[in-house]
Image 1: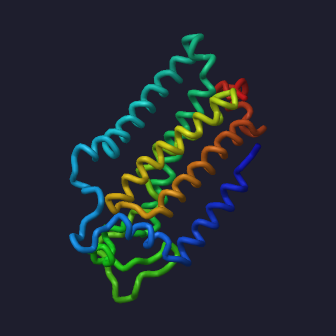
Image 2: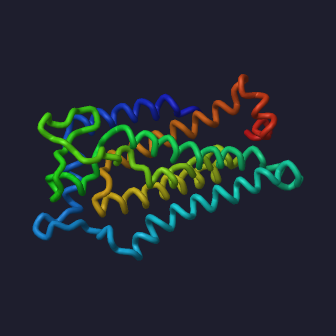
Image 3: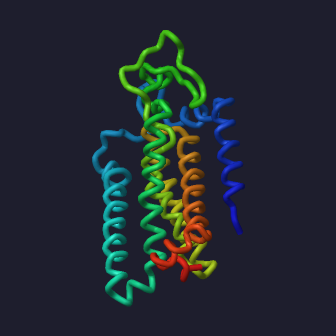
Length: 234
């Protein structure tokens, strides 16, 4: 069943709610102590940073390198040829999803919670589709929307389109969602992202992933699909 239209509608609803309500602030307030002016998680905590930030980044890169090698070997080794389409799909997801989301957050000019006046910073809270006050001038633009770090985890939702058995598909989808949200919640706990930032990242990832899947199966991409082996993959 194709869920792309549903994902687009949900994305629009999430953006509307984030734009017109203070739900992000209500949620984020629970992670901030106004007395000590600190977040539940210290962003300088090196152990947690390695587990939930630096480590996962390196892991995604490592998986991408392994998949790239396996994809190249698929033109030489019969064993890898069988899985070429699946390897290619996951590799595309790991490149496209973080790439698009990181590119988007570079132009949205939305600051992180820890930069806001409400949480001890110097930036007013302005939703993504609103303008900053005319008397406000920032030295650097905000680069916090949508959430870039969790996108590497959400990219693994492509596993839903790689496995063939329904049970395995759901497990793959669950792994991608859980991975993204573990990284996203860590970012929220240290004041790096709002709840809507992570939700939007997940929905954009799903839209990109399903689009990749559908494009590779469409007629204009039939020759590319055949070359990559995608046509043999359900």
